[in-house]
Length: 180
Image 1 (cartoon, rainbow, N blue to C red):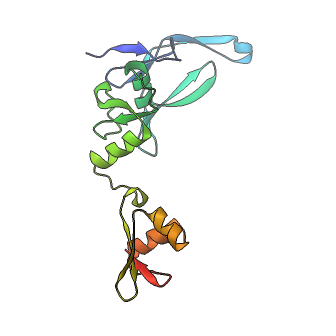
Image 2: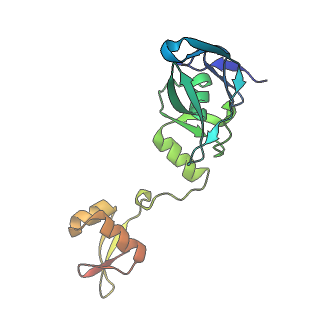
């Protein structure tokens, strides 16, 4: 059963539903010079548009001010408690167009990132993968083993991007040794 509820901050203007839909409410709209003219705008279920990143948004107009709002965020603000004040809304199934309340949850940025790697099988950023860095001499002997790129960069006196490039290509000479 679909339940409609006023969206916080837009009471009397817009409502959200448990099924992930948004509607504008019936109201008087004033316009023209000194707002002398008005008409009654009927209640209407809105047709959200996808953004370039694939999230759906709705355009609200209240008292002449226009605002773009992410539908999934509006649904979460309206229906999902957020006692820990988490700042991101996650689509549990990864489908950005599924804004049903059962598919949404509040997350921290790190929880959202972990979800994208663990559940959605997205590849983590290279800098996020924890690997030891092995410093090998030109004749093939292990010189040092570092616990991170940062540690290797400090010891060798070079930048972290150079370490990352050396590891990716496995053939870039750093000083008189190789990294892997």
